[in-house]
Length: 434
Image (cartoon, rainbow, N blue to C red; front, side):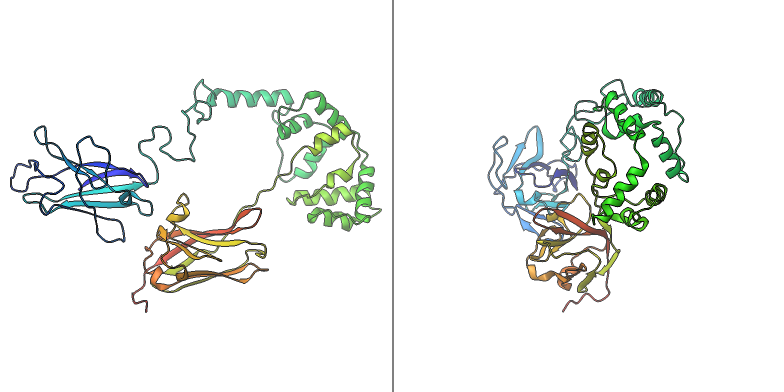
């Protein structure tokens, strides 16, 4: 069986076949076949599909692609070699392989061609058509860095430059101990040690040394008791400081000493709790140029999907799975549950995908023939409780293997994956579904 690798969804694909003469034992090629030779037929089959005929048509050796085109290349110099033009349906997305067969003519040995349908382009010399990789030569602009004397010398520059930075900032040999982080780090910052290096790392080379020195001087001269008064004033005015840091400050209350408030804040920071909101603005009245620099540092927010429970389903049984703890779903315009073999598969290649409003959208890499074969129902929007189902007539088609799934919501302003995990399909003994 001859084998080829072709990218999925390739169009106007032409292949070449060798057809043996079955009437001889030398392995010689069969000559003289044409698209209309008696009993000569071509068929193809895609996984889980049925045999489909590719109607053969007239073609020339150098002619433009024409679905089903079939012609002998050169009976004298290449006896037995034929050109065959495939239809676009043969290489379409949705499956990972396809088999093509020609047979039927007198004294012709059947020919079988297996084509692997890849998600990458084996003829792309730069990145194989994979968009997650840079589309540029290594060490060129936009390309992968390599260890040489080019755009980035990994061997020399990283080690040398880090040593130089540590020497210039006076931080060479400084170690922060996890157990004493709150005390040691605050002592260093209050005394002004390594402040310039710390702020340079946060903001980048755009901060000038003069500006950093000004900021260092301002922090050195902050009146700690003034900080306590400012915080208490904000709390008494009813202003909210979100998070457990605000709760600790509120517990300290008005009239607390500076050391009490400092201890409360340090305890929360040491525990890894976040300080949210514009809390820094109320702490100290810094000069305008310093405050502007501080307020220009952007806030960072990172939300990751929760790890979901690993699920087990049985191919051939009605699938009915509840998922809870997704958070408030009241604002969701649409909700999806998607099951795939690989993360880089497109939605239309999924094992199956259901949505709240659309029912079953895809099954085994193709548009679902009936949207009512699957569903997604919101049981409780406030607590984030959903249920998704799939009929037994659909689950029995799903291969026995490990898959991945996620739950995703779409709102008017954002798309967010709420949960992901693994789902395993296992076999059943009884295959009947009705």
